[in-house]
Amino acid sequence: MKVVLVHNFLRSSGPSGENVAYREECRLLRGHGHDVVEFTVSNDDLEGSGWRGSARAAAAAPWSFSAVSRLRGVLRKEQPQVVHVHNTFPLLSASVFYAAQGLPCATVLTLHNYRIFCAAGVPLRDGRPCIECLDRRSSLPALRYACYRDSRIATLPLSFSVALHRLLGTWTKQVDAFICLTDFQRDLMARAGLLPESLFVKPHCYLAAPSPLPWAARENKVVFLGRLGREKGVSVLLEAWRLWGSSSPLLEVIGDGPEEAELRRVAEEATLGGRVLFRGRLPFGEAQQLLGRAKVVVVPSISYEGFPMAIREAFAHGVAVVASRIGSIQTLVSEGVNGALFEPGDAADLFSVTRRVWSDDGQMRVLGLGARATFEAKYTANLNHETLMRIYDGAMARRRARIARRERAP
Image (cartoon, rainbow, N blue to C red; front, side, top):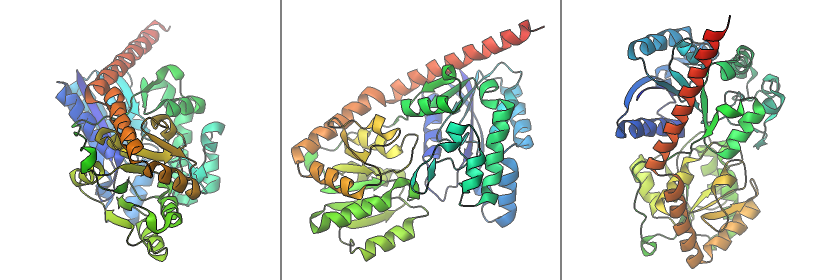
């Protein structure tokens, strides 16, 4: 099968699960013998361009005539069976789906976040999940609350994009299949207006699955791995460690992001220096080695996420997960099977749950074994490829039906 993969790379200077997922899907398809053509742009091209770069991104976010023209040329030349789009923000825009209009190739979009209906991409406001734009099927609340970068000016082109593509019917008329990362996300997107029959669930996989370290080789530590942004709840995690006191295990914080300086300051003021170690952003392999030596991974998110990569990686390494009981996360982590759940944003509950798990080494080991069993049952490369092929088949069937209806129309 020939597939054109479309992606707007986020800046390489910051951590991006979307970039990782895109690259792994390329490798997954090529590893199974498919012909993959890549159509990509990068936000690195905006680096150092100041207000001109911001203006260029804002202008392209609702509609990019250039991207549509260039992609249509690729589709006519390559004649793929499927066009699979990952991220379009901000340089490609949702307009890229119109490049396939009138062509037989099926169109697929992976929903890494909620940006098609949420201007901020991450539905979070005032430290709590907010799905007002989804429930009201309107982008006006985003403007009212200045949801993107706390700026109405920055939010305006994104809100306009949401409104424009709702009005045009882009999501019902131009996309044959949507890939949601969890059942929770699928149900929420159907509630927001996507056609239920166009929604499929395919989680992330881990291509080069590691062999979990023997329990005796693990270190007495807990790991957080991810972007240091507000939505990740790392400030809640640090407060839980403060409550735990001097008997807490070592906490390794792996990653960087806009909250890093503030989090380091908080840790220093709370005198957590000997118990919290900020590793910064590390190469993927090095980060995985550190994670694989842990006994527990904590995912303290306070917002609805698609599928945190740290959960996939913890399961692959056979590491128990302590996570927020929120959104998609609570559908991934099963209490007493592969981890434990706590109330999102509640440092005292996070402390209590993590201490309970940590106090029973034998139970931690059982949860680690359960994590690996979950990975093998749901997240291997072969299972992921089989699911992806079923989605592509469904998308192609929908595209054929669209063409047939158009040909029958008077």
